[in-house]
Image (tube, rainbow, N blue to C red; front, side, top):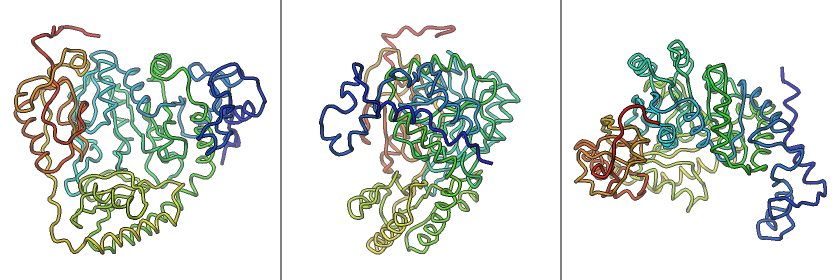
Length: 499
């Protein structure tokens, strides 16, 4: 039974009324509802600017909503099976920061997989929380990190019963999900808050053929990118909450610290209308795209040198479940890296893929994906394979080394400490002041506050030699020769309870 109230778009409706009201604007923004001609207005039209208002009378305030924004957020929460929702206009990154900062205080333990998004590490720096890492499941055939097992989570919880929260990625960038319901139930038994990064899972709430969303699984709080998979404009996301474990006053105060006081009305309007569309049409359109995806996978599997990483494969690897709106294609048997294919697809076939890794590429399918798009994709892979499948030199398999370096201080302490650059080979026993990650699978080799051991230096060099893509906070060049460390000679290391 559909809720007729979900037909409403309270914020978007009021925004349209305002834009068409012929108001005399003596407030910001300075374009005065499109009265300044420019190239963007000529291309996109004046209506774009008519919808770019900044909290005039009647349009409510995102920081303390009591009117149409509050109503739109209530509808969003109901549509996504949450108790409350909070609109975000600078992405799920802000949502993740707000989750960590509002739940965890200085020195609180938070359990999390090692392959978290860098915004989580930044949340540790801002909150002062102490990470307890768990190992995700690694797929060495494809070269990615997948879900975390319940057994690994249970062990981490049992060894850290004083932890304040656990943070789960659900789904991963590639669509793999953990047994979130079981993890949540166990964490709640131990009075631990469950936070979820579901940046790539907004569509879950609108089809029973997809995995459970965080709120459906009983999690306490999640950050969800509506713009990635549910059709709103880029940077528009939501925080969802459920139950009594979240301090909403603290969450609201944290959001008000992080969010702009001039939030984009266009982004909020896009959230309002995307929610309505997904609520009434998401189920049927997701069913359609899943069928189209199935046909595309079957065709791709017939192409020599192309391997489709599908749900059957992932379940056989021990993954709990998989979101089939993600399409993973292994291309390394063609003698090409995923990075090569990513570039070729755009330059030669005008096809824009979502992501490349060393051995594979990722395509994201949504209710906006068309049958014609998928047919073009399959045809492009056929042409690609016919051109490159004769190459005999296959890419070597990426080998993973896995360790958790010793924590010397919290990430926050390392961030605030004096720092300097040092050659990598001279960094033994120093304290890292930055993160260095290996892509794939996106796992930090070192984060701020951890000790750079001989093994860490060895692993960085190992991945460089094997062709892995290394990224750091200060240098995105794969040839990382220097590392930023804590200048211990000029650092007062405080002991005791730190803020």
